[in-house]
Amino acid sequence: MPGRRLGAWLRATLAGLLLTAVAPAAGLAWGDVGHAAVAEIAVGHLSDRARSEIERLLPGGLSEFVAVASWADHISETWPESYAWHSVEIPHHSSGYDRERDCRNDDCIVERIKLFAADVGDHRLATEKRVVALKMVIHLVGDLHVPLHAYLPDRSWDGWEGPWIQIGDTVDVLHYWWDDHLVFDIGPDAQEIAQNLGAAITVDEVDTWTGSGPETWANESYFLARDFVVRHGLLDVARWITYTEDYPMVMPEHVREETRAIIARRLAMAGVRLAWLLNRAFE
Image (cartoon, rainbow, N blue to C red; front, side):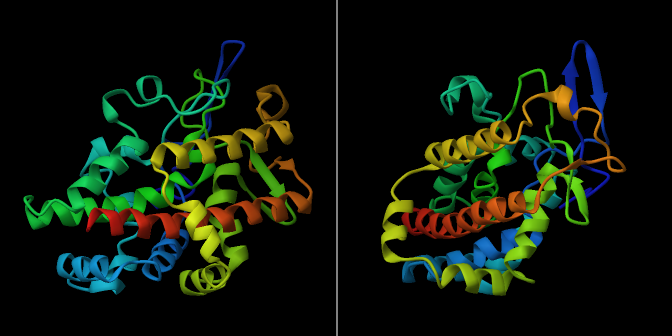
Protein backbone atom coordinates (compact mmCIF):
# COMPACT_ATOMS: atom_id res chain seq x y z
CA MET A 1 0.00 0.00 0.00
CA PRO A 2 1.76 3.18 -1.17
CA GLY A 3 2.11 6.13 1.22
CA ARG A 4 0.74 4.21 4.21
CA ARG A 5 0.70 7.13 6.64
CA LEU A 6 1.90 10.18 4.75
CA GLY A 7 -0.41 9.19 1.91
CA ALA A 8 -3.61 9.28 3.97
CA TRP A 9 -5.55 12.47 3.39
CA LEU A 10 -8.77 14.14 4.17
CA ARG A 11 -10.43 17.17 2.66
CA ALA A 12 -13.78 18.33 3.87
CA THR A 13 -15.76 21.50 3.22
CA LEU A 14 -17.60 23.00 6.17
CA ALA A 15 -19.06 26.50 5.96
CA GLY A 16 -16.60 27.33 3.21
CA LEU A 17 -13.61 25.97 5.13
CA LEU A 18 -11.35 23.54 3.25
CA LEU A 19 -9.38 21.23 5.46
CA THR A 20 -6.47 19.38 3.86
CA ALA A 21 -5.04 16.78 6.20
CA VAL A 22 -2.08 15.13 4.45
CA ALA A 23 -0.89 14.24 0.96
CA PRO A 24 -3.28 12.45 -1.48
CA ALA A 25 -3.52 8.69 -1.76
CA ALA A 26 -7.11 7.66 -2.44
CA GLY A 27 -7.78 4.11 -3.48
CA LEU A 28 -6.10 2.31 -0.62
CA ALA A 29 -7.88 -0.59 1.04
CA TRP A 30 -6.95 -3.76 2.93
CA GLY A 31 -3.24 -3.70 3.59
CA ASP A 32 -1.01 -6.35 2.01
CA VAL A 33 -1.99 -8.87 4.68
CA GLY A 34 -5.73 -8.39 4.18
CA HIS A 35 -5.45 -8.71 0.41
CA ALA A 36 -3.31 -11.83 0.70
CA ALA A 37 -5.84 -13.34 3.13
CA VAL A 38 -8.64 -12.77 0.60
CA ALA A 39 -6.58 -14.54 -2.08
CA GLU A 40 -5.73 -17.40 0.31
CA ILE A 41 -9.42 -17.93 1.05
CA ALA A 42 -10.21 -17.83 -2.66
CA VAL A 43 -7.69 -20.59 -3.40
CA GLY A 44 -9.78 -23.01 -1.35
CA HIS A 45 -12.87 -22.30 -3.47
CA LEU A 46 -11.38 -22.34 -6.97
CA SER A 47 -12.59 -24.93 -9.44
CA ASP A 48 -10.14 -27.36 -11.01
CA ARG A 49 -10.51 -25.49 -14.31
CA ALA A 50 -9.76 -22.13 -12.67
CA ARG A 51 -6.70 -23.54 -10.88
CA SER A 52 -5.37 -24.92 -14.13
CA GLU A 53 -5.92 -21.62 -15.98
CA ILE A 54 -4.27 -19.61 -13.19
CA GLU A 55 -1.25 -21.91 -13.24
CA ARG A 56 -0.93 -21.30 -16.99
CA LEU A 57 -1.09 -17.53 -16.57
CA LEU A 58 1.10 -17.15 -13.48
CA PRO A 59 4.54 -18.84 -13.48
CA GLY A 60 4.36 -19.23 -9.71
CA GLY A 61 0.88 -20.75 -9.83
CA LEU A 62 -1.34 -20.42 -6.78
CA SER A 63 1.51 -19.14 -4.61
CA GLU A 64 1.93 -16.23 -7.01
CA PHE A 65 -1.86 -15.80 -7.05
CA VAL A 66 -1.62 -14.89 -3.35
CA ALA A 67 1.66 -12.98 -3.68
CA VAL A 68 0.29 -10.54 -6.31
CA ALA A 69 -2.84 -9.67 -4.34
CA SER A 70 -1.53 -6.16 -3.57
CA TRP A 71 0.13 -5.55 -6.94
CA ALA A 72 -2.52 -3.05 -8.00
CA ASP A 73 -1.75 -0.83 -5.01
CA HIS A 74 1.79 -0.27 -6.22
CA ILE A 75 1.31 0.75 -9.84
CA SER A 76 -0.45 4.11 -9.58
CA GLU A 77 2.65 6.06 -10.61
CA THR A 78 3.23 4.01 -13.75
CA TRP A 79 -0.48 3.51 -14.47
CA PRO A 80 -2.16 6.67 -13.13
CA GLU A 81 -5.53 5.98 -14.76
CA SER A 82 -5.86 2.95 -12.48
CA TYR A 83 -5.99 5.30 -9.47
CA ALA A 84 -9.78 5.67 -9.71
CA TRP A 85 -10.49 1.97 -10.07
CA HIS A 86 -10.06 1.05 -6.40
CA SER A 87 -13.30 2.56 -5.15
CA VAL A 88 -16.71 3.95 -5.98
CA GLU A 89 -18.10 7.08 -4.34
CA ILE A 90 -21.74 6.36 -3.52
CA PRO A 91 -23.15 9.49 -1.85
CA HIS A 92 -24.58 9.30 1.66
CA HIS A 93 -28.12 10.38 0.79
CA SER A 94 -28.67 7.76 -1.92
CA SER A 95 -30.35 4.37 -2.10
CA GLY A 96 -27.22 2.67 -3.45
CA TYR A 97 -25.04 2.36 -6.52
CA ASP A 98 -26.08 4.21 -9.66
CA ARG A 99 -23.83 3.58 -12.64
CA GLU A 100 -24.61 6.85 -14.43
CA ARG A 101 -24.07 8.96 -11.33
CA ASP A 102 -21.27 7.04 -9.59
CA CYS A 103 -19.24 5.52 -12.42
CA ARG A 104 -18.96 7.85 -15.38
CA ASN A 105 -17.04 6.28 -18.26
CA ASP A 106 -16.95 3.04 -16.23
CA ASP A 107 -14.15 4.63 -14.23
CA CYS A 108 -14.80 2.96 -10.89
CA ILE A 109 -14.25 -0.33 -9.14
CA VAL A 110 -17.67 -1.82 -9.92
CA GLU A 111 -17.42 -1.65 -13.70
CA ARG A 112 -13.67 -2.33 -13.77
CA ILE A 113 -14.14 -5.64 -11.97
CA LYS A 114 -16.58 -6.67 -14.66
CA LEU A 115 -14.30 -5.56 -17.48
CA PHE A 116 -11.20 -7.23 -16.06
CA ALA A 117 -13.09 -10.45 -15.27
CA ALA A 118 -14.18 -10.62 -18.92
CA ASP A 119 -10.57 -10.11 -20.05
CA VAL A 120 -9.26 -12.84 -17.76
CA GLY A 121 -11.31 -15.48 -19.51
CA ASP A 122 -10.85 -14.20 -23.06
CA HIS A 123 -8.35 -16.53 -24.78
CA ARG A 124 -8.28 -14.23 -27.82
CA LEU A 125 -6.32 -11.66 -25.81
CA ALA A 126 -2.56 -11.66 -25.36
CA THR A 127 -1.39 -13.55 -22.29
CA GLU A 128 0.17 -10.40 -20.86
CA LYS A 129 -3.17 -8.60 -20.94
CA ARG A 130 -4.94 -11.50 -19.28
CA VAL A 131 -2.30 -11.63 -16.55
CA VAL A 132 -2.79 -7.93 -15.80
CA ALA A 133 -6.55 -8.46 -15.73
CA LEU A 134 -6.16 -11.37 -13.31
CA LYS A 135 -3.99 -9.32 -10.96
CA MET A 136 -6.51 -6.48 -11.04
CA VAL A 137 -9.46 -8.79 -10.33
CA ILE A 138 -7.66 -10.40 -7.37
CA HIS A 139 -7.05 -6.98 -5.86
CA LEU A 140 -10.23 -5.10 -6.73
CA VAL A 141 -12.62 -7.75 -5.43
CA GLY A 142 -10.86 -7.37 -2.09
CA ASP A 143 -11.08 -3.58 -2.29
CA LEU A 144 -14.79 -3.57 -2.98
CA HIS A 145 -15.46 -5.43 0.25
CA VAL A 146 -13.91 -2.63 2.33
CA PRO A 147 -17.00 -0.62 3.37
CA LEU A 148 -15.28 2.77 3.09
CA HIS A 149 -14.40 2.04 -0.55
CA ALA A 150 -18.00 2.37 -1.61
CA TYR A 151 -19.07 5.38 0.42
CA LEU A 152 -18.71 9.16 0.33
CA PRO A 153 -20.32 11.16 3.15
CA ASP A 154 -20.86 14.25 1.02
CA ARG A 155 -20.11 15.21 -2.58
CA SER A 156 -18.19 18.28 -1.42
CA TRP A 157 -15.71 15.98 0.33
CA ASP A 158 -12.86 14.36 -1.54
CA GLY A 159 -10.61 11.42 -0.66
CA TRP A 160 -12.42 10.84 2.64
CA GLU A 161 -10.33 8.92 5.15
CA GLY A 162 -12.38 9.76 8.22
CA PRO A 163 -11.39 11.34 11.54
CA TRP A 164 -8.41 10.49 13.70
CA ILE A 165 -9.65 7.89 16.17
CA GLN A 166 -8.19 6.38 19.32
CA ILE A 167 -9.29 2.99 20.65
CA GLY A 168 -7.21 1.77 23.55
CA ASP A 169 -3.63 2.89 22.94
CA THR A 170 -3.87 2.95 19.12
CA VAL A 171 -4.47 6.11 17.08
CA ASP A 172 -5.11 6.28 13.33
CA VAL A 173 -7.56 7.61 10.77
CA LEU A 174 -10.77 5.61 10.47
CA HIS A 175 -9.87 4.19 7.07
CA TYR A 176 -6.73 2.52 8.40
CA TRP A 177 -8.56 1.11 11.38
CA TRP A 178 -10.59 -0.85 8.84
CA ASP A 179 -7.66 -1.62 6.56
CA ASP A 180 -4.92 -2.67 8.97
CA HIS A 181 -5.42 -2.67 12.72
CA LEU A 182 -8.61 -4.71 12.82
CA VAL A 183 -7.32 -7.13 10.19
CA PHE A 184 -4.39 -7.95 12.48
CA ASP A 185 -6.84 -8.51 15.32
CA ILE A 186 -8.09 -11.53 13.36
CA GLY A 187 -4.63 -13.07 12.94
CA PRO A 188 -0.91 -12.23 12.73
CA ASP A 189 -0.51 -13.04 9.03
CA ALA A 190 -2.50 -13.75 5.89
CA GLN A 191 -2.25 -17.52 6.13
CA GLU A 192 -3.55 -17.69 9.69
CA ILE A 193 -6.32 -15.17 8.97
CA ALA A 194 -7.39 -17.24 5.96
CA GLN A 195 -7.32 -20.42 8.02
CA ASN A 196 -9.32 -18.86 10.86
CA LEU A 197 -11.96 -17.40 8.56
CA GLY A 198 -11.99 -20.13 5.93
CA ALA A 199 -12.63 -22.89 8.44
CA ALA A 200 -15.83 -21.15 9.58
CA ILE A 201 -17.37 -20.63 6.12
CA THR A 202 -20.39 -22.87 5.61
CA VAL A 203 -21.86 -24.30 2.42
CA ASP A 204 -24.98 -22.20 2.98
CA GLU A 205 -22.87 -19.05 3.24
CA VAL A 206 -21.08 -19.85 -0.01
CA ASP A 207 -24.47 -20.31 -1.71
CA THR A 208 -25.77 -17.06 -0.23
CA TRP A 209 -22.70 -14.97 -0.98
CA THR A 210 -22.29 -16.05 -4.60
CA GLY A 211 -24.60 -15.49 -7.56
CA SER A 212 -24.61 -11.70 -7.21
CA GLY A 213 -22.16 -9.25 -8.74
CA PRO A 214 -20.08 -6.13 -8.07
CA GLU A 215 -23.13 -3.85 -7.88
CA THR A 216 -24.50 -5.89 -4.99
CA TRP A 217 -21.11 -6.05 -3.28
CA ALA A 218 -20.77 -2.27 -3.60
CA ASN A 219 -24.20 -1.71 -2.07
CA GLU A 220 -23.36 -3.99 0.85
CA SER A 221 -20.19 -2.00 1.56
CA TYR A 222 -22.01 1.29 1.13
CA PHE A 223 -24.74 0.47 3.65
CA LEU A 224 -22.25 -0.94 6.16
CA ALA A 225 -20.17 2.24 6.00
CA ARG A 226 -23.17 4.55 6.11
CA ASP A 227 -24.65 2.71 9.08
CA PHE A 228 -21.33 2.87 10.96
CA VAL A 229 -20.88 6.58 10.26
CA VAL A 230 -24.43 7.46 11.35
CA ARG A 231 -24.38 5.23 14.43
CA HIS A 232 -21.17 6.77 15.73
CA GLY A 233 -21.94 10.37 14.87
CA LEU A 234 -19.23 10.67 12.22
CA LEU A 235 -21.38 12.31 9.56
CA ASP A 236 -21.27 15.59 11.45
CA VAL A 237 -17.95 17.11 10.39
CA ALA A 238 -18.30 19.82 13.02
CA ARG A 239 -17.99 17.09 15.64
CA TRP A 240 -14.67 15.75 14.43
CA ILE A 241 -13.08 18.24 12.03
CA THR A 242 -10.69 19.44 14.73
CA TYR A 243 -9.51 15.96 15.73
CA THR A 244 -5.84 15.34 14.94
CA GLU A 245 -3.31 12.60 15.47
CA ASP A 246 -2.29 14.27 18.73
CA TYR A 247 -5.88 14.96 19.82
CA PRO A 248 -7.97 12.12 18.36
CA MET A 249 -11.61 11.19 18.82
CA VAL A 250 -11.71 8.54 21.56
CA MET A 251 -14.00 5.56 20.94
CA PRO A 252 -14.84 2.74 23.36
CA GLU A 253 -13.35 -0.74 22.98
CA HIS A 254 -16.68 -2.24 21.89
CA VAL A 255 -16.40 -0.29 18.62
CA ARG A 256 -13.24 -2.22 17.88
CA GLU A 257 -15.00 -5.52 18.52
CA GLU A 258 -18.02 -4.52 16.43
CA THR A 259 -15.91 -3.42 13.48
CA ARG A 260 -13.61 -6.43 13.65
CA ALA A 261 -16.64 -8.71 13.21
CA ILE A 262 -17.70 -6.78 10.12
CA ILE A 263 -14.20 -6.95 8.67
CA ALA A 264 -13.88 -10.69 9.30
CA ARG A 265 -17.09 -11.33 7.41
CA ARG A 266 -16.13 -9.04 4.53
CA LEU A 267 -12.74 -10.72 4.13
CA ALA A 268 -14.40 -14.13 4.02
CA MET A 269 -17.03 -12.96 1.55
CA ALA A 270 -14.38 -11.37 -0.68
CA GLY A 271 -12.41 -14.61 -0.85
CA VAL A 272 -15.42 -16.73 -1.71
CA ARG A 273 -16.64 -14.26 -4.30
CA LEU A 274 -13.22 -13.85 -5.89
CA ALA A 275 -13.10 -17.60 -6.48
CA TRP A 276 -16.67 -17.64 -7.77
CA LEU A 277 -15.96 -14.80 -10.20
CA LEU A 278 -12.84 -16.50 -11.57
CA ASN A 279 -14.55 -19.89 -11.79
CA ARG A 280 -17.15 -18.27 -14.01
CA ALA A 281 -14.56 -16.37 -16.04
CA PHE A 282 -12.67 -19.57 -16.83
CA GLU A 283 -15.69 -21.71 -17.67
